[in-house]
Amino acid sequence: MQITPDPLTKPQTLALLASHTADLRRNNPSARACYVLDTARLQTDPAITVFSAWSDHQQAKELLGIAALKELSPVAGEVKSMRTATSHQRKGVGRALLRFLVEEGRRRGYECLYLETGTRREFAGARALYHGEGFEDCGAFGGYVDVDGENCFMRLRL
Image (cartoon, rainbow, N blue to C red):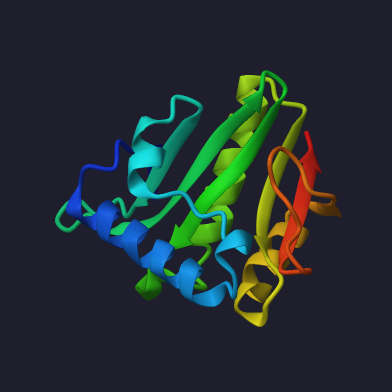
């Protein structure tokens, strides 16, 4: 697996991101509880770096997943827009991307990484992954607001 910065210009990454956005909007009961970023924001916000994971087969490189890291301050970052391609779910892609973002956060000198996800059953796998990698529940951060218990906020001290 190769994980590299991604400008979100390839059809594969754009399609995966579109699917991710549609699923998040469908699985959140309120637009106020859905903090998903659209493609334009991910491409143009200088605080956000998107990464994509690709199979390392020379003949047929395949997109495995995407994830983004947003700088909140010189000492804190936020995990954004993590998504594994459907055909590669439960194969360790999400864990590899998350570990990559944690190492990138350390390389940047962050003391803490944060994230926001949902509390509904559709997000249970994501929450289990984050807890399994050492993230702990915390209160809302940055500009987030807990909307009727639909949001889960987590942090990992680096």
